[in-house]
Length: 479
Ligand code: GLC
Image (tube, rainbow, N blue to C red; front, side, top):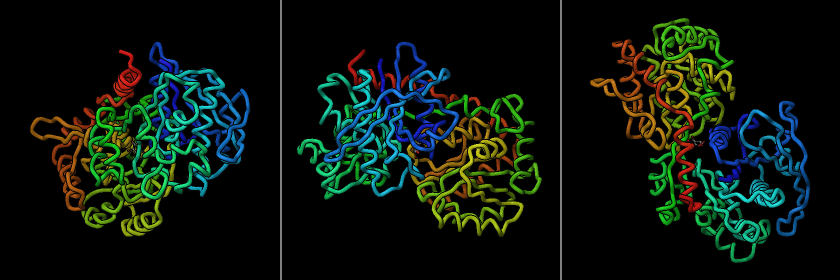
């Protein structure tokens, strides 16, 4: 099958969150399957251009039209022997030589441009995909532009729009089509949502199929509480709305090899080697050298929906228990300040590192005992998968992908993967931590067994990759 994918970020080139991880592993997983031809389109951000790790060859340049604007498109291809798919980079310095990569006043225009440019590049390359898979609002206009401008060039191409997070939808003025996108007037209605234009809504009604990143999130999105206004539109897609739980790239997140870790381990060597990693991590973070106190961690964007408010709320109570707590991440100023000031009261036992540092994150996953993830909502969540893969036991709010991947531990049978709480409140969160702590203090043998079971869970892209293929085949009408 010929598959073109488009996204606004992908590791290892540039990543700001989980989307970037998925866009590294999913194209690779699909590209490795026999019979597939896969390519991934990304903006050629200044940060990628100046990064000497990437050698790109120029293919062509041309102009496209965005309403009255003539815009330059440079097409580059990554020269690489190690990856099993082609990476194409769309060059326009005016739009993509920016820091940070999101959050500019003209983001709508920048990504409308990108969406149009991807189709124009595919057309130039004469690559006629069976499927174009687009991700989140930044590439949501691809199905719309395909209908509005490129149908003649791609009469059989189907589109799949994947929602990684419904909270960011791509809102613009009601005259966005007339002023920027420049599709025929009938498409103004496709874009219209209330008094404005909404990229995600346009994709949901235009794509041949819609998917999201876990089964539970797919169900949740059909309720107003979770859908940020999209439930009605999504309910109409029932039948062509899929939930496929993400995996992680187990060659990147590998406790037996990761160059970031001082001590490598497998399931068999985990107990001893994790203790060494814990000691090293306590030293690195300035925590007391204490091997027998459970170290709970969180590596997260410090944003409201990640449950940081709950964490702040329970923090003092939590610190009355015999625990250590380490938080790594950056985000909203209110949470950065609140957590930092709480941590000052618990020197040696609680630490906050305001950093986005993948190397440190790796050492934190490896050195910790428990991983906290109280997200208010969580489309899939990758951290709990990484934690489990590193033998670090998750304590999570049972929502979205967390519900699908962290099966509650049953002390009578020893089955399950971690500790969960059902309703979003501080007491229940604390209770879940307490339950995990009882296992740690009262039954270390079963704690270790649980950690080993977690390490053995298949969190690779193998199964999700196959589910994507099944969805693509259904959509493309290939049996
Ligand atoms: C977003 C979601 C996260 C998901 C990731 C990759 O970051 O918030 O839950 O795992 O996308 O799909």
